[in-house]
Length: 157
Image 1 (cartoon, rainbow, N blue to C red):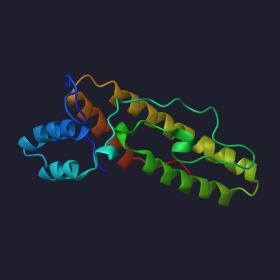
Image 2 (cartoon, helix red, strand yellow; image 1 turned 120 degrees about the vertical axis):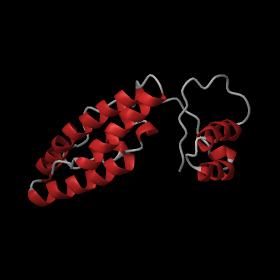
Image 3 (tube, helix red, strand yellow; image 1 turned 180 degrees about the vertical axis):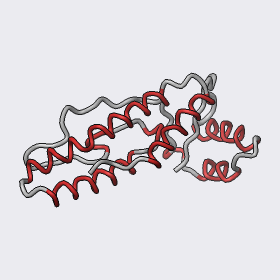
Image 4 (cartoon, rainbow, N blue to C red; image 1 turned 90 degrees about the vertical axis):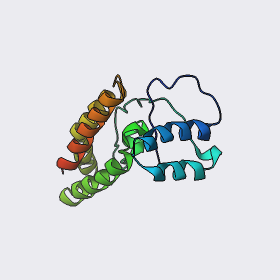
């Protein structure tokens, strides 16, 4: 997987791959990473997604008496912060802890949902901050702050 972000990209000219290569070349010229050029060049055109950042609406509930949603099914996010997989893995750990600690399944699922709500609210705030960045420097600063937060905090169990 690769992702190239661009602010003030100008008119979209050429194929998706050509546009991605043009932007990736800008990074490579700065000495960032020549491997990115190879990844982009080898990606089939039909596999390249070109999207504006989109925030996904929150669901009012993630659980019922017998069902718990995890990962993107519970709390989908735009891919611009690349955290969906991590959050899904965290969900599994918290759900397991809740089911182990509470014999009543419905109560365990409610405990899981409540335990995840605060962390996900913080992730959503970081996501919105990154989405609203005014330029590439601000985007990088906000994304770095989010990444640091994710790496230095643990999910509530």
